[in-house]
Length: 116
Image: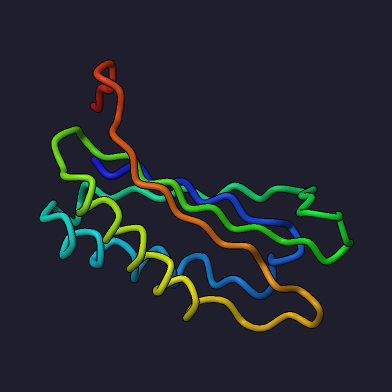
């Protein structure tokens, strides 16, 4: 069930350990929301152009979206967002002049969600 999508700026390609992040993220989600490891799925989407604030060439963004089956308390979702952002910091190498804006959102899947 956890459907995880990570959008990241192209200029972070070499400084973001995506696979390592996903492999650490899945057990963290299991521990935090009490789900099964084999239900965690993460996909990464490289974004070729991002603009933050005044739009410098070194703009970078990472946004982690986690969609769960409904029923978890807002406080638990907020806690998961926090621990995910903490984990992310350990999977980003410094890139000269690039300071990414990072965010995480945990939301409920729509009632139409199906899996096979």
